[in-house]
Length: 204
Ligand SMILES: Nc1ncnc2c1ncn2[C@@H]1O[C@H](COP(=O)(O)OP(=O)(O)O)[C@@H](O)[C@H]1O
Ligand SMILES: [Mg+2]
Image (cartoon, rainbow, N blue to C red):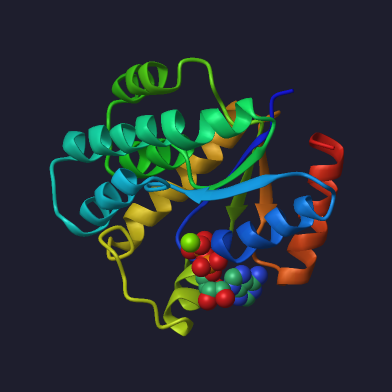
């Protein structure tokens, strides 16, 4: 039996990383074997590409190609084998992020995105995507409070992040059965209750 593939998406500071491990533990308590991973990254090579992607300035298409190169590695070495073993994979960001950041944020041609997505993933899509959505100023406030060292993307201007947010919402609108929009301007407890409900209805 094939495992389930769950991805977390949303702008920086939305709260994705605060719930990834929690969700994995919640699933493990139900007897499910779970792999937790992230993009870009998730493999030894992928983490090296992540360091370049998050820090080095580069051409938009170089950035997109590297994202998908890291994704190919991630799928081949970690995600696909785990799903084939019947394990679940919980991943902090996946292709919707490329669509939102390189597409919405930076203006990559949608057809180029679709070509690469098809090449790298064939027909594989997450079974469920949890999109953490909230106003930009609240996300910014959280990042400042956390004293986080900002990466290349986090250093982008407000209008960049607004386009990323809108692209995510547009993607959710186009994929309503896969992408569940979570109001992330809420307490961690309330968000967890909401996630439990979504998982029970959609996956268990
Ligand atoms: N619901 C929430 N309410 C208040 N603060 C939160 C909430 N969720 C996360 N945070 C805090 O906001 C910061 C960013 O959260 P994080 O999970 O790292 O976001 P992301 O991974 O989406 O960038 C962290 O310091 C985290 O503790
Ligand atoms: Mg994070």
